[in-house]
Length: 171
Image (cartoon, rainbow, N blue to C red; front, top):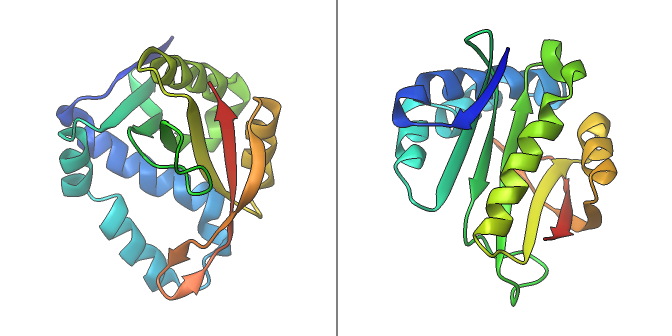
């Protein structure tokens, strides 16, 4: 049975671990310096960082369980200015991660629909995200779901730049 619900601070350990595993699954092979990857995890996917974000009113998390095991999560950042449309009331889908073994179940689409509906309910006009240009599976997923490729942005892990594409969708 699949359960998707809003995450609470008690889910921080699950989300931190899922963040590390899913990022490694989707991006780890591209990060040349593994020390930079570990530093990145300690900065962005530590339990303390996730707890801090879960207590921030401008950050919303959802967590996905399959038979009570955590298998994915999403993070929506409210009031995040679009890098190319500064005059638009926008939010950012910062993370939508599902463990590789569960991707075929189409849970990512269900999770994304929940996040998009919340953004609409909160009256946002636009949602945007970034995806590493080599992450073809992620890029194809977002394009299939109506996101448009509108530009690029630099994304650093350690000292190395990993160019990301910017995608946006009107709500």
